Amino acid sequence: MSTRWVRFKEGNTIRIGTLEGEQVRIFEGNMFGGAVPTDRVMPLADVELLMPVLPTKIIALWNNFHALGEKLKLPIPAEPLYLIKAPNSYLDPNGSIRQPACGGKVVFEGELGIVIGKTCRQVTESHALEHVFGYTCANDVTLADILNRDASFPQWVRAKGFDTFCPFGPAVVTGLDPAQLVVRTILNGEVRQDYPISDMRFSVAQLVSLISQDMTLYAGDIVLCGTSVGVGSMKPGSTIEVEIAGIGKLCNRFE
Image (cartoon, rainbow, N blue to C red):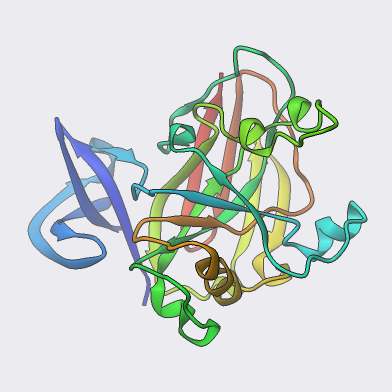
């Protein structure tokens, strides 16, 4: 059975809770352990949803889907290829993605996010899922124009690290089988991406295990699984939605 966890603001107080239809059940304590339900329930429409967790880092995969790799004629990677999204790029559900001051072509990338639930260091693939709390929707926004502008240095971190360039949420959902999930990205009402997570080169367990050999993952950290075909640019004034059935819909404006 799945549970949809959210962080939200009630007045000036930040709380955690679970979604029950169009209502939020308020919990006390820590989402990752010892959370206790209360008797208080609020209408979802009356709360301001925040990013559901506070990661110390977000890791974003490159070339992790067969379909996109084959389309771009990329070599098959021997190990996960990834970068880190800067904390300043994190953005709440319904927040506005802002055009960088330098301008340029801004690209959406709808993705599944793996949310770590407890400290994870050098874990085996067979134990990796024990360290996964749940899954969320994310948009790995990229300023495409500057990525390869300097021939001597691909600017991955800068291109993907501008303020507001990593919205995620609206919920973290436990109890899901990621291999059954499908990511849909919708630009101004038009479906632009519709791809299965089962097409990943590296599975969730493989990603968590292999990345944990390099660096310690902490509760709340997110691994973005990479994206697939249908990536495209968006113009200011656009609405971009990343929808994964069973998790929800992440909606942001690009201003």
